[in-house]
Amino acid sequence: MEKQHYLKLISEELATAPWYVQEYYQAKATVPLSPATLYQYLTEYRRFFNWLISEGLTPASRPADIDIQVLATLKKETVELYKSALLNQTKLTGAPGSRTHPTINRSLNALSSLFKYLTEDTEDEHGEAYFDRNVMHKIALVRTSETYATRAANLKTKLMLGNTDHDYLAFIDEKYEGLLSPAKKRYFHRDKQRDLAINALLLGSGLRVSEAANADLRHLNLKTGTIGVVRKGGQRDTVPIAPWTLPYIQDYVDHRTAIYHATSSDRALFLSSYRGQASRMQANSMEKMVAKYSSAFKVRITPHKLRHTLASKLYLATKNEQLVATQLGQNSTSATGLYTHIIDEEQRHGLEKM
Image (cartoon, rainbow, N blue to C red; front, side, top):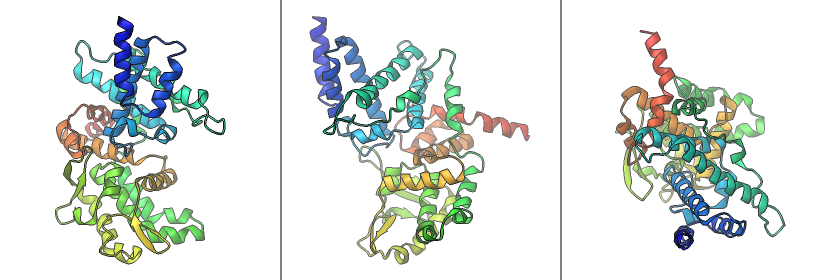
């Protein structure tokens, strides 16, 4: 009777799962893993996929549509962020039934099982695994003594705190060109103002990279220092932009038409040029661009780290988790508790100067 109950629940989970999770289930159902264990694993995958969607790390709007390449290219720091989010749920509730360290480790073990299957036990039409890189090999389980603050401290090394965000934009503006060959300088000169504006907008607003890529020129209001975007779930939002980043954005807007030969039909705020034709710059191109500049500056990061930089600095300035959640377009503060720990060192530095 209990087995039939779990099989019914499994069927419901599989109905909304990506094809590769359905395939994973078929393979593991013959191992055999117990139906109870398989059901728990499937719920963990749904939790993880929904987190990817809510954080704007996939263009998909439902788990079933998440492309396998999202998993193939997943960064270690992204999984660490998810791990921190799970730890934050425990911190915020602290109530019976909240996620303990053992239950968080079960979440990580479930993901490890899926990634092992996809990277070792599958075969495509060429007899190769679906992808080779197993990011879960780099993720440690939560130790009993490991605190939420420890997770935040690890993440902090990837953020641009203090004046580092200002220094980063200054590096792109004044020093990056010196690292380039003459051939590459031509393209850098063409795209420099746009690239500075994108980095400035992400640092000054905390937008998801998908929101920046989908933004239209008409939704940018430099007089009020705001930009209109479509959030996850299709909700429109007007997002304030930090004043110090506006000159970079203004400079790009002033030259956008001339650089990319834009016409009135080119609605996208950020444009690319291919054979003289303007087109909307895509989110994956923005990710590569941020990786290129950040690697040369200090350490390779993703646009998502620029978002977390803004959130951490905003919390440091306001101590208001709800305000940070609103700025990020989140419906609750469940994900913002991370920043209360990230800024602890900055806070200590401030106290030392008093």
